[in-house]
Length: 433
Image 1 (cartoon, rainbow, N blue to C red):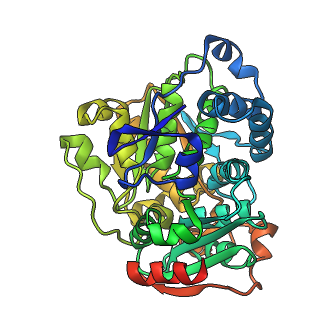
Image 2: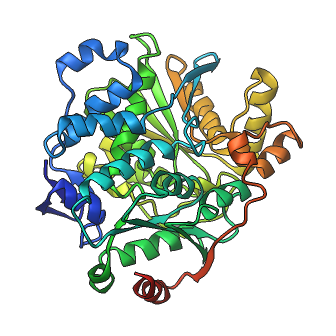
C-alpha cells in the first residue's frame, strides 16, 4: 500500500515513510491510496471473532502488504489485550467503554498499536527516533506508557499549562526515562502547531528522525477503527446503530468512517462537540473556519483547529453535502455537561466522564429526531480522571479512583516549561537531539 498527502494527491510514499515521518512535507495528512474493504469471508464470521482477531483482520487489510503476517498479528494481539464492553444503560442508549486499558482512556488502543508498529519499522534505523506528541489530556499519558522504556525511541510530550486535569498531568509527567514532558504556556492548538512546525524541519531531522504519535499519524488512527466493528456485533443484526463520538481533533470519528468504508453498516455518525465546534458550520453550509480554542470541562476536546478534518474532507471528496449525509454534529455547553452527568447518575446509576456526558447529551438530541435508531455512545475515559469536574457534578467522594490512578498522587511531576514559540521549541530540540 502507498500513501498520499491530503494536500498533494500525486506524491506516494511507503508505509514506513508515512508512519515514521508522520506528516508529509506539505503539512497535509497521509491517507492510503485506497481505503480497503474487508472481504465477504470476514463479514460472514465477524460476529463470532474475538476482539483482538477483528483487529488482526483490519490491520491486515491496511498493512498486510508491508508487514509480515505473523509479525502484524502478534503486535496487534499484544496491543489489544483488554476489552471494550458495550454497556446497555438506557433504552436505545448503549455506552462503549473504551477506558479499560493501562491509562484508562481510548487512546490506549491506538498508542499501543502504534508503538509496536513503529518499533518494528524503525528496527534498522541506527539514529533512533524522537516521537513528538501534542496532548489535550489523554493522548500524552497513553503514548507515554506505550513507549516507556522502548529502546531507541525518545518521546517528547507537549501539553497546555493548566488545561489538563491533575491526574492526566501526573500520567504524562511522572515516568521519566525516555519520556520528556513540556508544559507549554498556551493551548492545545499551540502544542499541535509546535509539533507540526518541527516535523518537517530538516535541521532537527538531520540530528534525529522525528515523528508524531498524535492522530495525525495513520498508525494511531487505524487501530481505533477496531472497536467500532467490535461493538456492532453486540447489537442485533437489524439494529439501526448510530455512533455518537465525543470529538476534538476528529481522529476518533475519522476512524469510524474508515470502519464504514471497510464494510461496517452504520446508520449515521454523530460528532458530539463542546464549545470548540468548527464542524457544524461546515456541515450546514460548507464553511470551515478554524479558531482559537477555549477551555471547557471536557478538556480533551478543546481543539479549535482539528487536524483530522482534512482526512474527513478527503474521504467525502471535499463535498460538504456528502459529509453531512453521513455525519451530524451537536455542540454541548458546560452546564449541559454537568446536568447530564447528574441526570444519568440519578436515573441509571451510571457515571459518565465529562466527554461521555457530551456524547450522551448529543445522543439525546439525535434520538429526539430519530427515535427508531439506537445510539452507541463512545465513553472515552474513566470518570476518575476528572475528579474536579465529577466532584462539581456529583459532590465529593462519589467516584471511586482506581489504584492505577490513586498511586500517582504522591509521585513528583517532571515537566519543563516551554513558551508557545516555534523558534524556542526548535532550538530546544536541536540542543537535546
